[in-house]
Length: 395
Picture 1 (cartoon, rainbow, N blue to C red):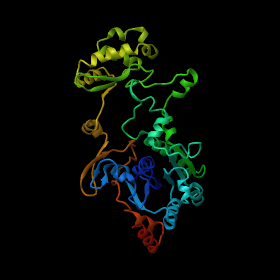
Picture 2 (cartoon, rainbow, N blue to C red):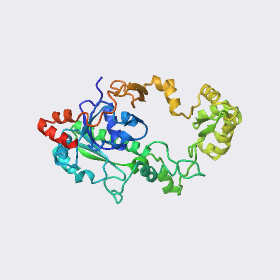
Picture 3 (cartoon, rainbow, N blue to C red):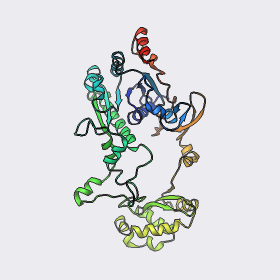
Picture 4 (cartoon, rainbow, N blue to C red):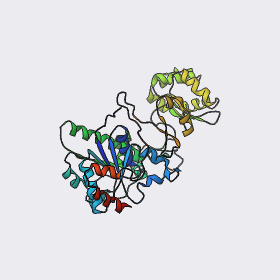
């Protein structure tokens, strides 16, 4: 079934996480994504984390549905081919340090002159302007400066991080969102192309809720609160008798009453001072202690069964093993069983979001380095001798 982005061409000048993840989302929903890679080994992500043979398992996911074209952007022929690709594209996605593409003759001014309707998504640490624009910026720095690291972890320990590249992934999602809005403007005839300037720092900052107005109005600096959700009660992570942990969100007024009754604390359910969230926040420690007393006397399955019967949102903290074994993940198509190019079976994450009429799909896993170079360059109209000259340099 054709995806909703069929007919859209995306050219990716990116490595590792932020730009490639954004381009992957386009590819999953039908866009033709041409990933331009260096002849010197291609995207470093090909070798990151666990390898099957000499290729990362992450690569099979991050580059699925993409075409790999190898170009030496520092050569005249390679840069010229890249410009021709951009001239044929709807969207270019890149995550060079600001000014990096300009040094190669591939900056916004050069590419938009060739293609006035081009959308250029530029993902960088601090954005294309401002006093920090030239600093190197990784996702970890975006998480730190964006505010999320300061608020993550236990109050008694240094700020923590989550175990995935959150800052990069958030920047990717903002990049896709901006690109789609800009594309809509072009495709509906409202205007021409433009730059979508995405900062890792600002992508994290955009998720920080009322952090700034609370500080501006009251001087309140939100601190680390462990597993609790600050200012919302009760919502926390609680231990069970079998050494597991359960997340319980009992913070809406009716759910709070059902939770208290489920744990045998009808007195708290009927206490008028706890009827709304502001009153519960004042007594949050007392409520957490009551819930902990109840959960710590039962194994996690018993806890979840009781809370499910009471219609209280709760869940175990899932590991990868829990995810793969879960029937809901399976029923929702979030676990895709496929094979790698050598025939090795593999399970990959499904495609999000789920569209009812034009869902995304996985057509192939990450391509071999340069697998589509000759095909794509021929489609651009390059003569056979020009293609031979370019690819010969790459070898």
